[in-house]
Image 1 (cartoon, rainbow, N blue to C red):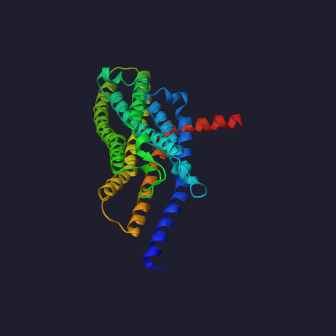
Image 2 (cartoon, rainbow, N blue to C red):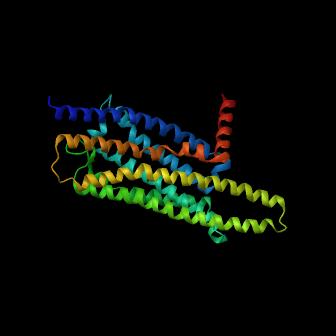
Image 3 (cartoon, rainbow, N blue to C red):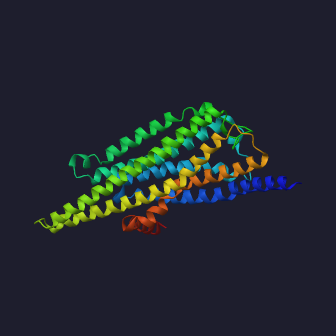
Length: 324
């Protein structure tokens, strides 16, 4: 074989190994993290907080996204992936993956809005930060996400040859619509919302600190101040958890969108077999890399959630130990 053929085989083998082993790591990383997240955030002390409720709903959506998106990829190295050969399974899996990931990301964006509302000085805005409004927002996002990706049942098809995946958009137009919709609605717009309302929340917190200093100088009882401080502590750690998640969200999701746009822009160019092999490896790497955004939340909350999240995790572990 020529050196060119050897390079092609090497890149194709690297892609196979990437899908076989890196996907298993992300799958286990995300499944364990999201299950623990759901158990901790379901505790009584946290589930009454609208921001924690949105974190909980986002973790459920991320768990669905990882199971539907990565389970077949982890088994494809050792068994036949039916979503690559049966069109209706391909369409259903793709629909569930895109909908669940969009819901997960939009719920985090909604959580930043909730943190901004809860930090506002205007009491009317603070009163909007409620569980009922969080549930309403979740339902609206669910319906909107389902309607947004209905075209998957027409656009996606199995057994494709000239595509990054066998289960993929059957035409350039379908791929363009899908990629633009996912990039802007599920990634870019939520990221802009997170950044904007995150900055607005920081401004509100700085203003509230000045007011607290003034209040503490007045004759308010210590009991009232302590209750306020405990509530502020919970809100502070939830906000910090949110900011860390927003930063990593951008790091994990934006490279995939950039790679897809570059690939679409070069779709009409004639490529060699080596170019296609390299592009296929890069596509699969960033595709798997983006799934880290769906599996990272528990580890972020544990490391950056302070005593609020870790105490609930310890209580959960003690409860499980007592049962067994």
